[in-house]
Length: 310
Image (cartoon, rainbow, N blue to C red; front, side):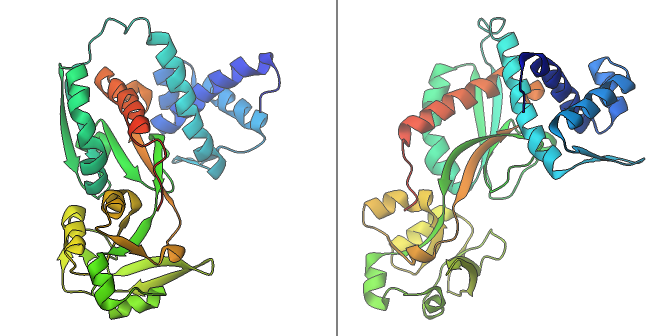
């Protein structure tokens, strides 16, 4: 994209202007925030489009919207700007102690199994910080609901958030060894119609399980005598031999290792899904949030050097 040193600096400046236009919603508002004139900001974005050879914004008299290329570039711009700002303030922040309430939201299973165990060490390291973690499988608006960061399982993080990938997971079918011995393992997804399937009640389309069959999607309608809205209860019911569940590989990893659960239909598992830590762009990022992100990325990597998709 950048072929020589002379182009690099103008391009970075143009990226700042482009990102601010996206966040402010207009060239005029972006220019005001940047302390520049509207024509200057417009020219910088136009120059960036010319340099990249593609349109980044759809312009109408009423609003601006991102093109596909613009959406992809914006995520990279946010990261570049964040790194530049972090370098600028690094020395000034050396003597600052993180403090205050850190609010985190995460899915039930991941929050319980992968975030909660890290909190004691984090709070010991940063005693002036306190943590509130809200477990929910719904997508919570960080800005509107006052959260500092979130963990999301998604194929496509929201373009207005900074996303740092933690790992990859997939949903697998499993039951206790005793259940499989009594009822037999399904050989194909359609065989689940003959099994008692425990349903995760808080998820949309919870009775429709998705599989990959011959590189094509296959949806199977399941039924059972127990519906529950938490992964821990779902998992324990399966361990107790009640029926078949479908959870992420991370959620059942320990039970499978301990032979309390056995997977089935692995070859039909749906495509892998990434798990990200997401947060608002750098200008909204507090010191307490920054240190937790850095701490947790390191903690998670040490604890899960190669988190497998079973």
